Image 1 (cartoon, rainbow, N blue to C red):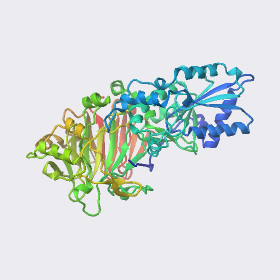
Image 2: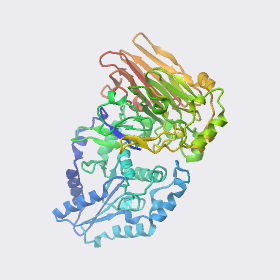
Image 3: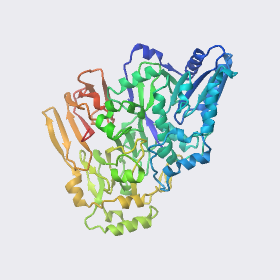
Length: 612
């Protein structure tokens, strides 16, 4: 699936000591020069030094090797560059290890919740590398550099003079994967047939646990997202940056995606996104997004969101951290549904689908949390509607039979079965697991959900997509094959809720909690199975609120040009959101206020857990 990053107003300004700011090295040539000088600083007469460059998938390892090698030759130094790939088991053995996590399910896998990268290393090869590191006095090289994922794996870490961790964000990694250019475990060249399930259900977790271990002992952090613009910071400096980042609101780089109904409101509210012709899904906040950080260095740092989970109590609160380790439990999306001219429902709607609860996700996919969802209507256009629930008179057995027979290749009259609700701005639909639903077109939806996966894996069970073609991002047309449905999961998971249940329980209404003539806080009604609250803040003057030291909050500006979110205790800890932009407000942020810079009316809609 194609996706694009949108960086406008995504930078986080972080104040750090001058010593940290000045020590950040930016640019590939300066970084490689600095690494080589660090290597030289570890060299001693008659003794070869040993350096580890560990890291994530996606890093340009061959480029690092070539760059360091060329500089060393110019300096008259001899480097022995050893790829860690040579210490892994065979490709067949690695695939056999992944097999229980890839599973036979065509759309989902089973999370590797216990494995470590050491599981894939060949003990004999690692033993040989250890011997080489221990006996390096006999080496003819000035330095040994071991590079690649696992370079500081258990048993090797204590043998190095210098340890560097090279990091990478999730979206560029996916581009490499889809293009068959990703270098994976045990390989020094791209693996063209590497499947996304291997990454999301197995390799991601091995990489994450290795990163967490490496962060405990690294000497330097290498931001390696753009091979042409590397950045290097000491481990001490990196930790200061993370400590300061999580003390304030955190903006993320949005991702936008064309899809089966791709719409066009984004063209009016976003700056130009080269290559993006339409927009369906658009993620505003979540674990898979990256974070831009400006500390006053010559260039910004680009960090994976997983890195802020190094400070889990500050970010999500102690209770959530203890119950869901490593998990960012909430996410926010924007679903476009605008067309300048009327289109059929089947052109402007997302697939009809439902989501799993926590028990279903644990049992089937080994995930820690289910997918609980809401739709808040941000904008509504003529004939706006949301699909949710079955009509009272609908024959559910016939619906299932028609969906199975069609399997998204044959059209049938879905409106005979599915209720489509007329909507307006401010409407909120609660979507507990098992509820058949979908964006019904002609509206802009703020979708606020739980994030079920540490890796950011999506859990939507598609039932019917009108047998339509979807978006081909190469041809820039709706000519790609129809989407794959998940009929077995969808019908096994379905609660078969009808329109009366939706009307009585899932059409939430706002209840005023506090306010005056210039401010108002609403809390929407809920049902017990929904684990979060949806709250709305309407104001013209500054409006106070708090995380209470325990609630991660994700606010989105839905009315207004800009809003400032500012700490009451330390006003320099603030951020500015633009229209339809969200941010993460860490649980430890405490008392703060929403401010409309020009005094015009603003509306902020926010998700937070009920218990934290």
